[in-house]
Image (cartoon, rainbow, N blue to C red):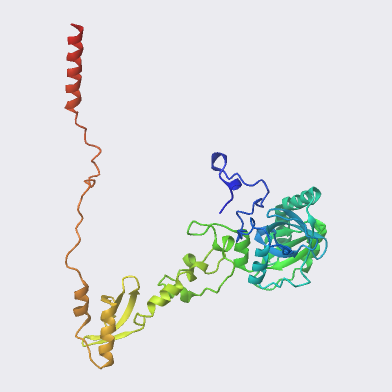
Length: 387
Protein backbone atom coordinates (compact mmCIF):
# COMPACT_ATOMS: atom_id res chain seq x y z
CA UNK A 1 0.00 0.00 0.00
CA UNK A 2 1.58 3.28 -1.05
CA UNK A 3 0.56 6.77 -2.03
CA UNK A 4 1.28 8.34 -5.40
CA UNK A 5 4.32 10.20 -4.09
CA UNK A 6 5.92 6.95 -2.86
CA UNK A 7 6.00 5.28 -6.28
CA UNK A 8 9.11 3.92 -7.93
CA UNK A 9 11.63 6.53 -8.97
CA UNK A 10 14.77 6.44 -11.07
CA UNK A 11 16.61 3.12 -11.60
CA UNK A 12 13.94 1.20 -9.70
CA UNK A 13 14.64 2.98 -6.41
CA UNK A 14 11.72 4.15 -4.25
CA UNK A 15 11.08 7.83 -4.72
CA UNK A 16 9.54 8.42 -1.29
CA UNK A 17 7.64 11.29 0.24
CA UNK A 18 10.79 13.25 1.20
CA UNK A 19 9.42 13.36 4.73
CA UNK A 20 12.13 11.20 6.34
CA UNK A 21 10.03 8.28 7.41
CA UNK A 22 6.59 9.87 7.59
CA UNK A 23 4.15 9.74 4.71
CA UNK A 24 2.80 13.17 3.89
CA UNK A 25 -0.55 11.84 2.72
CA UNK A 26 -0.67 9.02 5.28
CA UNK A 27 -1.30 6.55 2.48
CA UNK A 28 1.41 3.98 3.24
CA UNK A 29 1.21 3.54 7.01
CA UNK A 30 -0.10 0.65 9.06
CA UNK A 31 -3.87 0.40 9.49
CA UNK A 32 -4.55 3.72 7.80
CA UNK A 33 -8.25 4.63 7.94
CA UNK A 34 -9.73 6.17 4.80
CA UNK A 35 -11.71 9.28 5.71
CA UNK A 36 -14.76 8.78 3.51
CA UNK A 37 -16.56 11.65 5.32
CA UNK A 38 -13.98 14.24 4.34
CA UNK A 39 -16.06 15.67 1.46
CA UNK A 40 -19.29 15.86 3.48
CA UNK A 41 -20.31 18.93 5.44
CA UNK A 42 -21.77 18.74 8.93
CA UNK A 43 -25.48 19.44 9.55
CA UNK A 44 -26.43 22.94 10.61
CA UNK A 45 -25.71 23.65 14.24
CA UNK A 46 -23.45 20.61 14.81
CA UNK A 47 -19.94 21.28 16.00
CA UNK A 48 -17.06 19.12 14.69
CA UNK A 49 -15.72 16.38 16.95
CA UNK A 50 -12.96 17.81 19.13
CA UNK A 51 -10.65 14.75 19.10
CA UNK A 52 -8.09 13.74 16.48
CA UNK A 53 -5.85 10.73 15.88
CA UNK A 54 -2.11 11.41 15.78
CA UNK A 55 0.60 9.01 14.62
CA UNK A 56 4.15 8.86 15.89
CA UNK A 57 7.14 6.70 15.04
CA UNK A 58 6.55 3.08 13.99
CA UNK A 59 2.79 3.56 13.53
CA UNK A 60 2.15 4.31 17.21
CA UNK A 61 -1.18 6.12 17.31
CA UNK A 62 -2.88 8.03 20.12
CA UNK A 63 -5.95 10.22 20.51
CA UNK A 64 -5.72 13.89 21.45
CA UNK A 65 -8.27 16.56 22.24
CA UNK A 66 -8.40 19.76 20.20
CA UNK A 67 -9.83 22.25 22.73
CA UNK A 68 -9.07 25.37 20.69
CA UNK A 69 -10.70 23.96 17.51
CA UNK A 70 -7.57 24.38 15.42
CA UNK A 71 -8.41 23.59 11.76
CA UNK A 72 -6.53 20.34 11.12
CA UNK A 73 -6.28 18.07 8.08
CA UNK A 74 -4.74 14.65 7.56
CA UNK A 75 -0.97 15.02 7.21
CA UNK A 76 -0.61 18.12 9.39
CA UNK A 77 2.32 18.09 11.81
CA UNK A 78 1.18 19.09 15.30
CA UNK A 79 2.75 19.67 18.71
CA UNK A 80 0.99 17.57 21.34
CA UNK A 81 0.99 17.38 25.10
CA UNK A 82 3.41 14.99 26.83
CA UNK A 83 4.19 14.14 30.45
CA UNK A 84 6.92 16.73 30.35
CA UNK A 85 7.51 19.05 27.43
CA UNK A 86 5.76 18.36 24.13
CA UNK A 87 5.80 15.76 21.40
CA UNK A 88 5.48 16.07 17.62
CA UNK A 89 3.32 13.82 15.46
CA UNK A 90 1.31 13.65 12.24
CA UNK A 91 -2.50 13.87 12.13
CA UNK A 92 -3.95 10.67 10.62
CA UNK A 93 -7.70 11.09 11.16
CA UNK A 94 -10.15 13.88 11.99
CA UNK A 95 -13.90 14.26 12.31
CA UNK A 96 -16.58 11.76 13.22
CA UNK A 97 -14.51 8.72 12.25
CA UNK A 98 -12.27 9.46 15.23
CA UNK A 99 -15.28 8.82 17.47
CA UNK A 100 -15.73 5.42 15.81
CA UNK A 101 -12.04 4.56 16.26
CA UNK A 102 -12.13 5.58 19.91
CA UNK A 103 -15.14 3.36 20.49
CA UNK A 104 -13.38 0.49 18.72
CA UNK A 105 -10.28 0.88 20.88
CA UNK A 106 -12.38 1.41 24.03
CA UNK A 107 -11.33 5.00 24.66
CA UNK A 108 -14.02 7.25 26.11
CA UNK A 109 -14.52 10.58 24.27
CA UNK A 110 -15.60 12.16 27.57
CA UNK A 111 -12.35 11.24 29.29
CA UNK A 112 -10.96 14.46 30.77
CA UNK A 113 -7.46 13.00 31.05
CA UNK A 114 -6.99 12.91 27.25
CA UNK A 115 -3.88 14.90 26.29
CA UNK A 116 -4.30 18.07 24.26
CA UNK A 117 -2.98 19.46 21.02
CA UNK A 118 -1.06 22.67 21.59
CA UNK A 119 -0.67 24.01 18.08
CA UNK A 120 0.39 23.25 14.56
CA UNK A 121 4.10 22.53 14.61
CA UNK A 122 6.24 25.50 13.66
CA UNK A 123 9.30 25.22 11.48
CA UNK A 124 11.50 25.32 14.59
CA UNK A 125 9.55 22.38 16.10
CA UNK A 126 9.96 20.37 12.90
CA UNK A 127 13.69 21.12 12.69
CA UNK A 128 14.27 19.93 16.27
CA UNK A 129 12.12 16.86 15.61
CA UNK A 130 14.03 15.88 12.47
CA UNK A 131 17.35 16.51 14.19
CA UNK A 132 16.37 14.12 16.96
CA UNK A 133 15.22 11.51 14.46
CA UNK A 134 18.61 11.69 12.75
CA UNK A 135 20.36 10.98 16.06
CA UNK A 136 18.41 7.82 16.85
CA UNK A 137 20.60 5.33 14.96
CA UNK A 138 23.81 6.72 16.44
CA UNK A 139 22.38 6.69 19.97
CA UNK A 140 21.01 3.16 19.51
CA UNK A 141 24.44 1.90 18.48
CA UNK A 142 26.15 3.65 21.40
CA UNK A 143 23.59 2.39 23.92
CA UNK A 144 24.12 -1.19 22.75
CA UNK A 145 27.84 -0.80 23.36
CA UNK A 146 27.15 0.44 26.90
CA UNK A 147 24.81 -2.50 27.58
CA UNK A 148 27.45 -4.98 26.33
CA UNK A 149 30.08 -3.36 28.52
CA UNK A 150 27.79 -3.80 31.55
CA UNK A 151 27.19 -7.45 30.53
CA UNK A 152 23.42 -7.09 30.53
CA UNK A 153 21.44 -9.90 28.88
CA UNK A 154 19.10 -7.69 26.91
CA UNK A 155 18.66 -6.47 23.34
CA UNK A 156 18.00 -2.81 22.60
CA UNK A 157 15.84 -2.94 19.48
CA UNK A 158 14.65 0.63 18.92
CA UNK A 159 14.88 4.21 20.16
CA UNK A 160 12.13 6.82 19.95
CA UNK A 161 12.82 10.48 20.73
CA UNK A 162 10.22 12.85 22.06
CA UNK A 163 9.44 15.72 19.71
CA UNK A 164 11.24 18.36 21.78
CA UNK A 165 14.34 16.16 22.21
CA UNK A 166 14.19 16.13 26.01
CA UNK A 167 13.48 12.40 26.43
CA UNK A 168 14.20 9.16 24.61
CA UNK A 169 12.35 5.87 25.01
CA UNK A 170 14.46 2.72 24.59
CA UNK A 171 12.59 -0.46 23.63
CA UNK A 172 14.29 -3.70 24.62
CA UNK A 173 13.65 -7.44 24.76
CA UNK A 174 14.94 -9.81 27.41
CA UNK A 175 14.11 -13.31 28.60
CA UNK A 176 14.67 -12.60 32.28
CA UNK A 177 14.38 -9.56 34.50
CA UNK A 178 17.19 -7.06 33.91
CA UNK A 179 18.63 -4.58 36.39
CA UNK A 180 19.33 -1.60 34.13
CA UNK A 181 19.74 1.11 36.77
CA UNK A 182 23.41 1.57 36.00
CA UNK A 183 22.62 1.50 32.28
CA UNK A 184 20.20 4.42 32.67
CA UNK A 185 22.80 6.43 34.59
CA UNK A 186 25.49 5.83 31.98
CA UNK A 187 23.19 6.64 29.06
CA UNK A 188 21.83 9.80 30.70
CA UNK A 189 25.40 10.95 31.33
CA UNK A 190 26.51 10.11 27.77
CA UNK A 191 23.52 11.59 25.91
CA UNK A 192 22.37 14.35 28.27
CA UNK A 193 18.66 13.44 28.03
CA UNK A 194 16.05 11.72 30.18
CA UNK A 195 15.88 7.96 29.61
CA UNK A 196 12.82 5.72 29.71
CA UNK A 197 13.16 1.93 29.34
CA UNK A 198 10.22 -0.06 27.99
CA UNK A 199 10.24 -3.84 27.65
CA UNK A 200 8.41 -5.36 24.68
CA UNK A 201 7.86 -8.91 23.45
CA UNK A 202 9.60 -10.54 20.52
CA UNK A 203 6.52 -10.17 18.35
CA UNK A 204 6.23 -6.48 19.21
CA UNK A 205 9.89 -6.11 18.25
CA UNK A 206 9.26 -7.65 14.83
CA UNK A 207 6.22 -5.41 14.49
CA UNK A 208 8.27 -2.27 15.09
CA UNK A 209 11.26 -3.24 12.97
CA UNK A 210 9.40 -4.92 10.07
CA UNK A 211 10.90 -7.24 7.49
CA UNK A 212 10.16 -9.77 4.75
CA UNK A 213 8.66 -13.14 5.64
CA UNK A 214 9.32 -16.53 4.10
CA UNK A 215 6.28 -15.99 1.84
CA UNK A 216 8.05 -13.06 0.16
CA UNK A 217 5.68 -10.42 1.54
CA UNK A 218 6.08 -7.90 4.34
CA UNK A 219 5.46 -9.19 7.83
CA UNK A 220 1.78 -9.27 8.76
CA UNK A 221 2.50 -7.78 12.18
CA UNK A 222 4.18 -4.73 10.63
CA UNK A 223 1.56 -4.10 7.92
CA UNK A 224 -1.96 -4.95 9.09
CA UNK A 225 -2.07 -7.34 12.06
CA UNK A 226 -3.00 -5.52 15.26
CA UNK A 227 -3.62 -8.29 17.80
CA UNK A 228 -1.31 -11.19 18.59
CA UNK A 229 -3.25 -14.36 19.30
CA UNK A 230 -1.51 -17.29 20.88
CA UNK A 231 -0.15 -19.86 18.42
CA UNK A 232 0.54 -23.42 19.53
CA UNK A 233 1.96 -26.51 17.89
CA UNK A 234 -1.55 -27.96 17.87
CA UNK A 235 -2.33 -25.61 14.97
CA UNK A 236 0.45 -27.25 12.96
CA UNK A 237 -0.71 -30.75 13.92
CA UNK A 238 -4.27 -30.11 12.79
CA UNK A 239 -2.93 -28.87 9.43
CA UNK A 240 -0.60 -31.91 9.21
CA UNK A 241 2.54 -29.83 8.99
CA UNK A 242 5.96 -31.15 9.91
CA UNK A 243 6.94 -29.97 13.38
CA UNK A 244 10.12 -28.35 12.17
CA UNK A 245 10.88 -25.28 14.32
CA UNK A 246 13.01 -23.72 11.60
CA UNK A 247 10.07 -23.69 9.17
CA UNK A 248 7.29 -22.94 11.65
CA UNK A 249 9.04 -20.05 13.40
CA UNK A 250 8.97 -16.50 12.09
CA UNK A 251 11.59 -13.78 12.33
CA UNK A 252 10.59 -13.11 15.94
CA UNK A 253 11.56 -16.66 16.90
CA UNK A 254 7.96 -17.56 17.80
CA UNK A 255 5.49 -19.65 15.84
CA UNK A 256 4.18 -17.88 12.75
CA UNK A 257 0.92 -16.00 13.16
CA UNK A 258 -0.27 -17.31 9.78
CA UNK A 259 -0.65 -20.80 11.29
CA UNK A 260 -3.98 -19.60 12.69
CA UNK A 261 -5.33 -18.24 9.39
CA UNK A 262 -6.63 -21.55 7.97
CA UNK A 263 -7.00 -23.40 11.25
CA UNK A 264 -10.79 -22.91 11.44
CA UNK A 265 -11.28 -24.45 7.98
CA UNK A 266 -9.20 -27.50 8.96
CA UNK A 267 -11.14 -27.93 12.21
CA UNK A 268 -14.41 -27.72 10.30
CA UNK A 269 -13.23 -30.32 7.78
CA UNK A 270 -11.99 -32.66 10.52
CA UNK A 271 -15.43 -32.81 12.12
CA UNK A 272 -16.58 -35.29 9.45
CA UNK A 273 -13.32 -37.25 9.55
CA UNK A 274 -12.66 -40.32 11.67
CA UNK A 275 -10.39 -39.61 14.64
CA UNK A 276 -6.65 -39.83 14.02
CA UNK A 277 -6.25 -42.54 16.69
CA UNK A 278 -8.96 -44.77 15.22
CA UNK A 279 -8.30 -48.52 15.04
CA UNK A 280 -9.75 -51.05 12.63
CA UNK A 281 -10.39 -54.67 13.57
CA UNK A 282 -9.81 -57.13 10.73
CA UNK A 283 -9.56 -60.90 10.53
CA UNK A 284 -5.96 -60.38 9.47
CA UNK A 285 -5.13 -58.31 12.54
CA UNK A 286 -5.44 -54.91 14.17
CA UNK A 287 -4.78 -51.84 11.98
CA UNK A 288 -3.80 -48.33 13.04
CA UNK A 289 -4.24 -45.01 11.26
CA UNK A 290 -0.90 -43.63 10.09
CA UNK A 291 -1.86 -40.56 8.07
CA UNK A 292 -4.89 -38.60 6.88
CA UNK A 293 -5.27 -36.29 3.88
CA UNK A 294 -8.11 -33.82 4.29
CA UNK A 295 -8.09 -32.60 0.69
CA UNK A 296 -8.21 -36.08 -0.88
CA UNK A 297 -10.42 -37.44 1.96
CA UNK A 298 -8.09 -40.41 2.26
CA UNK A 299 -6.69 -42.22 5.29
CA UNK A 300 -3.75 -44.62 5.36
CA UNK A 301 -3.82 -47.65 7.67
CA UNK A 302 -1.23 -50.30 8.44
CA UNK A 303 -1.30 -53.55 10.34
CA UNK A 304 0.22 -53.78 13.78
CA UNK A 305 2.56 -56.54 12.63
CA UNK A 306 3.49 -54.74 9.39
CA UNK A 307 3.66 -50.97 10.09
CA UNK A 308 5.75 -50.25 6.98
CA UNK A 309 3.00 -51.22 4.53
CA UNK A 310 0.25 -48.62 4.24
CA UNK A 311 -3.16 -49.11 2.68
CA UNK A 312 -5.15 -46.13 1.39
CA UNK A 313 -8.84 -46.05 2.33
CA UNK A 314 -11.41 -43.38 1.62
CA UNK A 315 -13.20 -41.54 4.39
CA UNK A 316 -16.52 -43.29 3.65
CA UNK A 317 -14.86 -46.69 3.74
CA UNK A 318 -13.28 -46.04 7.12
CA UNK A 319 -16.57 -44.83 8.59
CA UNK A 320 -18.27 -47.93 7.22
CA UNK A 321 -15.64 -50.25 8.72
CA UNK A 322 -15.78 -48.50 12.10
CA UNK A 323 -19.55 -48.93 12.13
CA UNK A 324 -19.11 -52.63 11.48
CA UNK A 325 -16.57 -52.90 14.29
CA UNK A 326 -19.06 -51.33 16.68
CA UNK A 327 -21.41 -54.21 15.90
CA UNK A 328 -18.58 -56.68 16.61
CA UNK A 329 -18.15 -57.45 12.91
CA UNK A 330 -14.71 -57.74 11.35
CA UNK A 331 -13.74 -57.27 7.73
CA UNK A 332 -11.52 -59.76 5.97
CA UNK A 333 -8.57 -57.45 5.26
CA UNK A 334 -7.61 -53.89 4.34
CA UNK A 335 -6.47 -55.03 0.92
CA UNK A 336 -10.04 -55.71 -0.19
CA UNK A 337 -10.96 -52.05 0.33
CA UNK A 338 -7.62 -50.62 -0.78
CA UNK A 339 -7.74 -52.44 -4.13
CA UNK A 340 -11.02 -50.76 -4.97
CA UNK A 341 -9.31 -47.37 -4.75
CA UNK A 342 -6.48 -48.27 -7.10
CA UNK A 343 -7.05 -47.11 -10.63
CA UNK A 344 -5.65 -49.75 -12.95
CA UNK A 345 -5.59 -47.44 -15.93
CA UNK A 346 -2.31 -45.64 -15.86
CA UNK A 347 -2.29 -42.09 -17.11
CA UNK A 348 -0.21 -41.78 -20.24
CA UNK A 349 1.46 -38.62 -21.42
CA UNK A 350 0.45 -37.51 -24.86
CA UNK A 351 2.68 -35.13 -26.73
CA UNK A 352 0.03 -32.90 -28.20
CA UNK A 353 2.23 -29.89 -28.93
CA UNK A 354 5.20 -31.85 -30.19
CA UNK A 355 7.74 -30.26 -27.88
CA UNK A 356 9.10 -33.35 -26.17
CA UNK A 357 12.39 -33.41 -28.07
CA UNK A 358 15.21 -31.46 -26.43
CA UNK A 359 17.15 -31.30 -29.70
CA UNK A 360 14.31 -29.97 -31.81
CA UNK A 361 16.08 -26.61 -32.19
CA UNK A 362 19.34 -28.25 -33.28
CA UNK A 363 17.93 -29.57 -36.54
CA UNK A 364 18.98 -27.61 -39.64
CA UNK A 365 16.20 -25.58 -41.10
CA UNK A 366 15.08 -26.52 -44.58
CA UNK A 367 15.37 -23.87 -47.21
CA UNK A 368 12.10 -22.60 -48.46
CA UNK A 369 11.77 -23.17 -52.19
CA UNK A 370 8.99 -20.65 -52.42
CA UNK A 371 11.36 -17.79 -51.90
CA UNK A 372 13.65 -19.06 -54.67
CA UNK A 373 10.72 -19.30 -57.07
CA UNK A 374 9.65 -15.78 -56.24
CA UNK A 375 13.16 -14.50 -56.82
CA UNK A 376 13.33 -16.21 -60.25
CA UNK A 377 10.00 -14.69 -61.24
CA UNK A 378 11.12 -11.22 -60.16
CA UNK A 379 14.37 -11.61 -62.14
CA UNK A 380 12.52 -12.71 -65.29
CA UNK A 381 10.10 -9.77 -65.02
CA UNK A 382 12.98 -7.34 -64.60
CA UNK A 383 14.77 -8.74 -67.71
CA UNK A 384 11.57 -8.53 -69.80
CA UNK A 385 11.01 -4.92 -68.79
CA UNK A 386 14.62 -4.06 -69.73
CA UNK A 387 14.11 -5.46 -73.23
